[in-house]
Amino acid sequence: MPFALDYEARRIGTFAVFQSARMGVVESKIDIDRAADEIECRRAVLAEKGVEVSPTTWRDQGRGWPPPITEDRSSVVDPDSIGIQLRKGEQEAELVLYRGGWADVEFWSGAISDDVHSETVGYEDPLSVDQFGEVLDRLVDRFD
Image 1 (cartoon, rainbow, N blue to C red):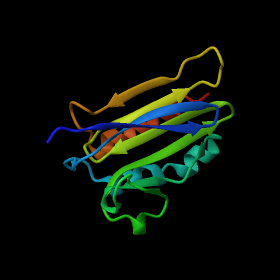
Image 2: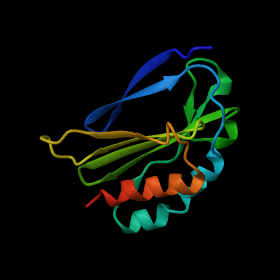
Image 3: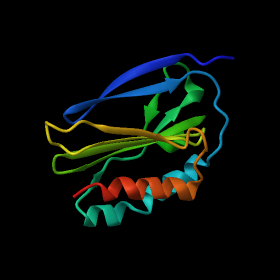
Image 4: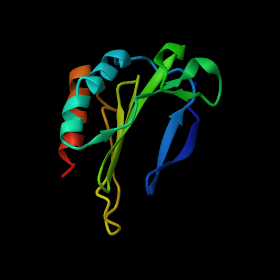
């Protein structure tokens, strides 16, 4: 079955991020719950560095279209992605990991003259949980 793309514009601070969402079933290639643990175990260190981290959000493919996004993991029937937003001063970032093993990573320096740096990691070669942790660490290292 071919995938249809749907684009959802979301506001993060002062810039818009356009995130693609795939309709249909995506094979699970990474344990999203373990990946969420990678985020949680870094929260204290990030706070010490002055990086604010949003609660982890879960997208639920088991509750119809459009799939709802919630912070309550226990209410999610079929998790297909997790996401966080990060901020330090004017700098902003977003990281969304999909169960297919890839992550969308966005970073903006906060300078009006700078573009948003956007990349997809792991699409061709799915990430492991450890590799996802490394992607998160590299993103955090971009903050001053």
